[in-house]
Amino acid sequence: MADSVYKVIELVGTSEKSWEDAAKTAVEAAGKSLKNLRIAEISKLDMKVDDGKVTAYRARVSLSFKYETD
Image 1 (cartoon, rainbow, N blue to C red):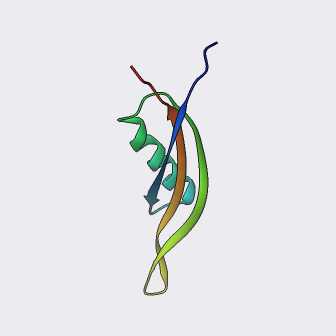
Image 2: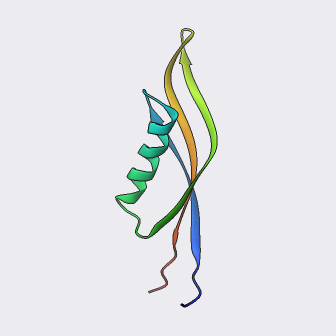
C-alpha cells in the first residue's frame, strides 16, 4: 500500500430539522464535487435564533479527502 496524503476542508451545513441533518447536508454537498471523501468530524454546533425561536441548526464539519496529484 502506497503512502497517501489527505486534504482537510471546513464546511458549515444548515438544516431546519436537526444538527445531524445539517452535518449530512454539508457532507453530501461536498460529495457532489469531491472524490474519495474519508472522514467527517463535527467541530462546532450552533443555532440560528429569530424572535426567540430556533429557525436553523448549523454544524461546522471538518472533512478529509484523498489528495490526488495526478
